[in-house]
Image (tube, rainbow, N blue to C red; front, side, top):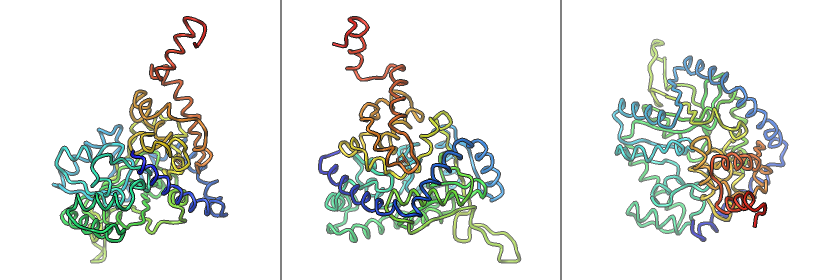
Length: 400
Ligand code: SF4
């Protein structure tokens, strides 16, 4: 990232920090904080049981579901569905899980136009080069209004002024036009309630409503997103919202528990009244079953990267794919391998522990990273300098 981008990112982070700091001391936030870790701990420890239960609930609700062991499995399920719907344009909502499986790259090879509907994600998509997000809910927080104006004018062949409203309107016009013929929407999920079989998604822009109104709505979510009940799911997304945006709630919270249907004419069931005729949930493992359990407590608020001194200095170079900072590095070991984990910044971490201190669900990321360094060294991945010291110690009994 350029110095100017890092500067803009730090300023954006300070704004979020000030907003969320003013909320986290409130009694309702404190209640959510103490509940959040409990819910995630229980959910991850009982994941197999909740997974079975949610599958039964989905069947009852007429939601199709598939279990994908790997990213490739998830992509092949998506390919089959898109073929069935003869789809060439997809409306896409923000999702780290879709980033994890590299959906856009995969579908670009098949000439399918994947249109980001979130403004920040769409700006990054138009940017084309160096378009990795810098924050889970503020993907373009490193770009200032002038940078964004240039990107939008160049890529959309328009001539807007560096005024946020003008930029927003130009992007909205283009996105809606592109989506006129899209019959498939795809998104992630913020939480899934196993007892009710309900998928909870939060957003401010109203874009998830766009995605969920297409004929087919595909939802790809990690198995770690399952929690016992709808009340738990709502607690988790409220906690995420407080830490991610500094607000108590987002403008929209979609709870999807099945396809759109009506029985208003002679009680005969008809699907696809306004929303999707078919909802398919792909529950993704992709290394999660072997992951350090506490890594999976993450609710995706991004507060760790906002407070991380390394991330503030180097940006999204520290992390893996859409999973940013130390927790992202840790996840890369399970999603990919030791080598990816090493290359994602395993040794960039200072082990200062500020991530843990600022994590609403107390993930001890610094301890996890320290442990991973041991495992990674055993697998042969460590900095060259460490190797020289190790050789010196074994041959000369001295590090020098
Ligand atoms: S590790 Fe904690 S602070 Fe970081 S994104 Fe996950 S829940 Fe938020």
